[in-house]
Image (tube, rainbow, N blue to C red; front, side, top):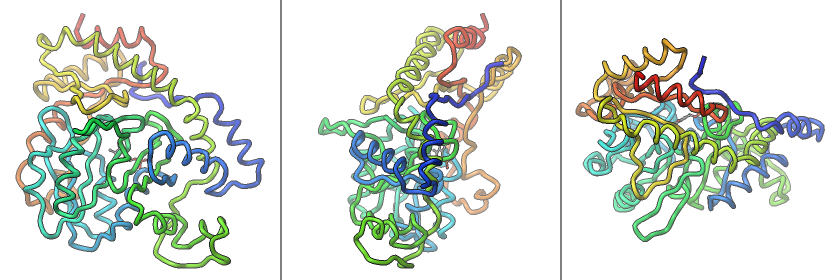
Length: 377
Ligand SMILES: *Cc1c(COP(=O)(O)O)cnc(C)c1O
């Protein structure tokens, strides 16, 4: 059986967890939390990082930080995970769903500005499969209309965008805020886990307070205040040192993990590129401004029928390939609230996109079998 995902363990996770437990400091914001946050800040030029218990939590923190009020509008793609929307819906926002573009499932920037109204507060681009959205276009619209940009970078660790002036920037370093996930399905993992990136310094102090249940405890531990107390709203967003210790073991192997994942991606791409015309599917297209972080390998079929036929063919050989998001504007929760036009590209990817098995330990032979099964050889 070839599953869709298999979490990869580097071997050091339990050692670091034991160390964290033995240190007597098991709650959050200790040694391993600092190690992880410092790594990301230095490696990717993120202004400030805070580990969270999930990407969902990081998005919820972002919604509090930009002070979403009932009735505020937030623009995001319909083709995304529920958390992208839920984080803002929880604070009363109205979600304005945008279509994907024809090249890939990322938000169609050419139609974005027509969705902006006087109630719009933020744009939440999602870097699908770790492939960058057109960030120059998004930041330009945001700057002209005074909007916040929150990158849903859940899938985008170690991926980059080159802006029109030639500067290469890590995804997650461009928007005012960004959210990453270390869920077991992502490139580096901690079971459940995430991170908020704060690039706009107006949010730094408040982010720490929201993170620590509405208290100024972080400042207290740094010796900046002589007692700590309730200073703002907040919640329990920070993970324990056990989670951070696990993540640190993964971070130490990030380069190796990324090399292996890129090799898997390339084997799929090279093995399938000749078959594209005969089998009527498309391979992922990576825009010139984007890099590939090998988060996912997907095919986009000509029709729902062709995709489902391929799923069954793989299933007959015990290979588990899966489709992905169902457009959120058509979801049971949102369909009656959605008043916009039909989002054809979002529906297109809901019906026709197929994700192939993708994990560190997937062998060359397994990939060959998957490719030949897809080609029906
Ligand atoms: C995985 C994912 C999330 C949620 O991440 P969690 O860490 O599970 O909360 C949000 N958005 C996107 C695009 C994702 O892929």
